[in-house]
Image 1 (cartoon, helix red, strand yellow):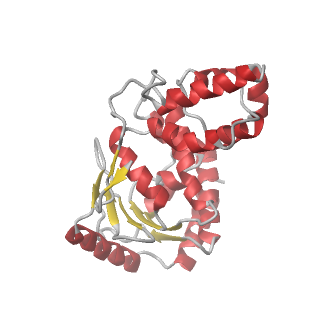
Image 2 (cartoon, helix red, strand yellow):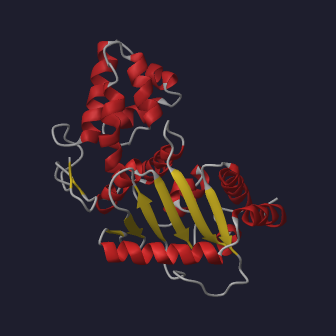
Length: 285
């Protein structure tokens, strides 16, 4: 896979290829390799499912190229199959790509290599911090045919925050995001508890823009800045029907200035955490 200076990755495979053919689809190839090794070992799908803490049905769908595997599943295959030698963990990133729309894949690859993420969201919690229940509720609204794959992929993105060299996260949220009852009280309770835990992690920063502030810079659309150990920052702008990446220096500078103004507008981190606690207690207890 090649990469230009703007950070845009050019996929070797054709994005329009049918993922059912193991010859052209990493997802189908991953499934075919699982089936080959499982049958070579004389293991049933139910037995593999038990090792991977999932059901027979999910194993069957992964082998057929119909479901995206989690990294835990790939690592289970590497532990279970005698001659895997880490092959499934190496294949997993390519298989995971097929859970994302083609236009979003370059962003995900950049996100995985980022050392710092700065995000602003005025309407919803960003996917990088969503719980499984919150993510499923949000993604279901688009009535996708591959809902479970989308949920899996969104949760797998969050590994950037827990890997050996974790990405640092700075999120600015409108207070209304915390009050919007996505999925109901139980879902929101779990989501705000997760956000509160992130706010306590010294690697990350959560800031809240209080509802008393009616207008502020960048209030029209969510956007983010990705920083890397080498190279310039890249901007990601969420949009409908597609988000997009910006790498021109002027665009990046404009986004950085807007984010600085948002940081100055929002409550400091030590004042934002009590807001989360208050909403959690008053609205979703």
